[in-house]
Image 1 (tube, rainbow, N blue to C red):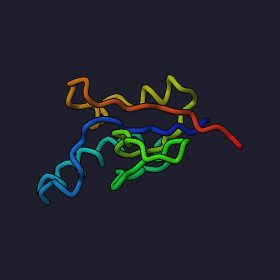
Image 2: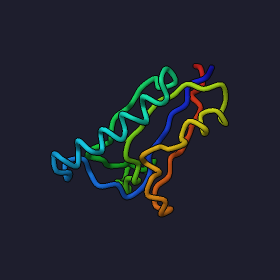
Image 3: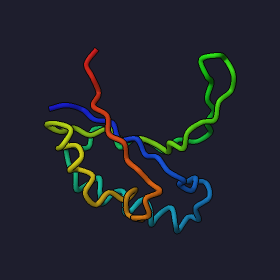
Length: 107
């Protein structure tokens, strides 16, 4: 089994802009997806908050629209991709949101 990082990318609304009711609703949907994965969910992760970037020339650069991460365990990249079925981050079906998947290499 290998570990894979999901990176959430897109114009997501920051968590601090949700009402308490909206936060509870979103968390319920995410919890349901997480429970569906069972032991394949290694690290639920967290949303990203404040951000900045620095270029290799030392200048400030625009930070990307990455929004958070999760870590799952699967046999291979196809298995990690299959685990995204029904993922809440991909529910809008607008093409604005992507979930990038990276295998975590051993060091």
